[in-house]
Image (cartoon, rainbow, N blue to C red; front, top):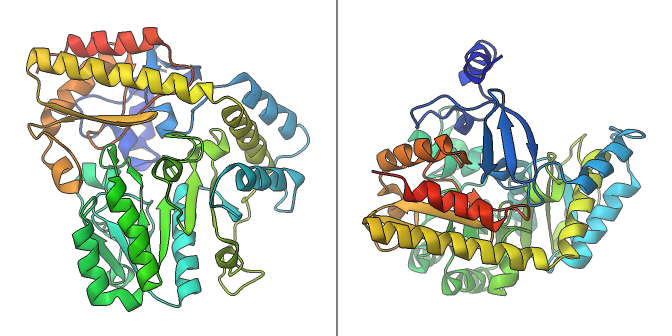
Amino acid sequence: MKNDDIFNESKLYMPGGVNSPVRAFKDVPMNPPVIKSGKGAYLYDEDGNKYIDFVCSWGPMMLGHCDTDVVKAIRDTCEKAISFGANTKLELELAKYICTTVDNVEMLRMVNSGTEATMSAVRLARGYTGRDKIIKFAGCYHGHFDDFLVEAGSGVMTEGIPGSVGVPESSVKNTLVAQYNDISSVEDIFRQQGSEIAAVIVEPVAGNMGVIPGDEKFLKSLRKLCDEYGSLLIFDEVMSGFRVAYKGAQSIYKIKPDLTTMAKIIGGGLPCGAYGGRKDIMEKLSPVGPVYQAGTMSGNPIVMAAGLTTLKKLHSSPQYYTQIEKLGQKLVDGVRKIARDKDVPVVVNRCGAMFSLFFTKDSKVRNYSDAKKCDTGIFAKYFTHMIKKGIYIAPSQFEAVFLSVKHTEEDIDRFLEAFDSFKI
C-alpha cells in the first residue's frame, strides 16, 4: 500500500487517521508520509522516499534510529522478559544510574510517558505542600492532563484551541497562568495567592511553542520566589533532559529544582517517563507516604534495558554533545545567513540539540505572545518545500527541530541547500 492509501484507510479506524493529532499534517497542504523504517539519521516511507530526519520521534532518538547497542539490549531482554508488573533488577539499575549521574535527583519513580510524569509530579507537590494551586506558563505544554490544558503550546496551539472540550472548569480552576520569561507576571501572582501555590512548573527550555530558552535571570528568580513562598519548583525536562546537556537544562543554568520530570530519551525510543527530586519529597509517595500513584507497566524491563543502554552511551561519550553543538551552530548560522541574503523574515532560537525557525518580522521570540505572531502561512510553504527536498521536519511552526548523534555535516549541508532554494 502507498502512503495515501494507508492514511486514508486509517481514517476509518482512528480519529483523523492518527494516534496523536500533529501527525495528521492538518495545517500543511499535504497528507503525511507513512514511515516504514528508520536507520541512523534517515527515514524511509511506504512510497520508498528517503528523508533526513530532524524530528527524531519528537526528541527521543538522540542516538538515531535503531542504534545497534539499543536494539541488542531490547532483543536480549525480550527473549526472557516482556512484562511482569513486578520488581526487576533492570528498573533498579536505570533508577540508580539516573540518580548517580544526574544532579538534583535523589530518588525517582518510573512511569510510562511525559504526561504521566508531569501530572504525577504536580500531585506530589500538592500532597507535599498541602496546597492546591500551581503556576504554569502560557505556551508551555506539559502533556494532556486536564490541569495543564490552559494556554498550552504544541498541538493545542497549532489547532488554535485555547484549552480542550472535555476539560471541566473545575479541573483548571487551580491552574494560574503566567508569561514565560516575564518574572513580573509571576511575582504578581505570588503576591496575590502565594500561600496557596503548591508549585511552579516550567520548561527551562520551552519546546512546544517552538524552541524558546528561558532567560537565566527569569529561571533563577523562579527559584527565589518558590523559596520565599514555600512552593516547589518543578523543571519539566521531558524534552530538554539529556538533550541540551546530559544533565539537562538545569545544569546549564546551574539551578536546583525540587522535582524534575523526564521522558523521551530515558526510554531509548520506547514509552517511558520518570519524575524525581529531593528524597524528603519523593518519600511522600505511596507506599511510603500518602500520595498515591501507580502504573502496571511502569519499569517495564524492555524499556528499562533500552533506556539504560542509551543513557550509558550518552554519559560515557561527552564528545556526542560537542559534535551536536558544532552541527547545531553550523545549521543556525547557515539559516540566518541565507535568510539575510534573501530578505526572509526569520528568527532562529537554539539550545543544544534543539532549534526552531520562526517566520516573523520581530527581532526576538521570547514567549507565547511572540510565537503567536509568526506567519504560519509561510511556514506551511516552507514545510512543504523542505519535505519534498527530503528534509523531514515537524509539520508545525510551534514544534522543535532535533539533532541526533547520527547527523553529519553533509546532512546539515543538505538542510541548508534545501532552505536556500525556498521561495516565499
